[in-house]
Length: 92
Image 1 (tube, rainbow, N blue to C red):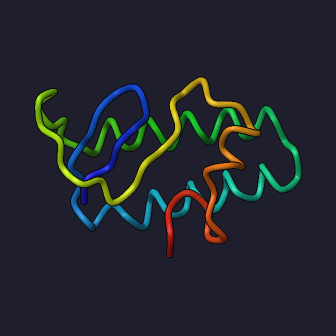
Image 2 (cartoon, rainbow, N blue to C red; image 1 turned 90 degrees about the vertical axis):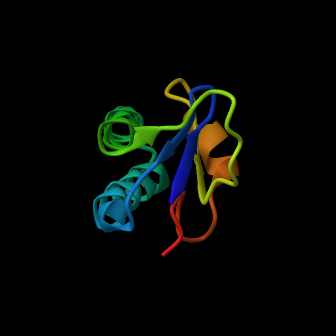
């Protein structure tokens, strides 16, 4: 699957990593719903770090359709709320 981090580009991740990303996404959604700003910052960082660690960067000139689009590391709680579907940032 191709994942885009806004402002950073795209990475290709194996579908086998979806469970780890989804767990972090569920945690992020819970922190957002409770208004836990510190937890939100920590979990957003962990989610983006996982994508960076597990994914293979695509060349800067590649433009593949992204299965997931994640916010930039400096996104605010309100920015991310506007991006959410009912399932969080990662559907499923």
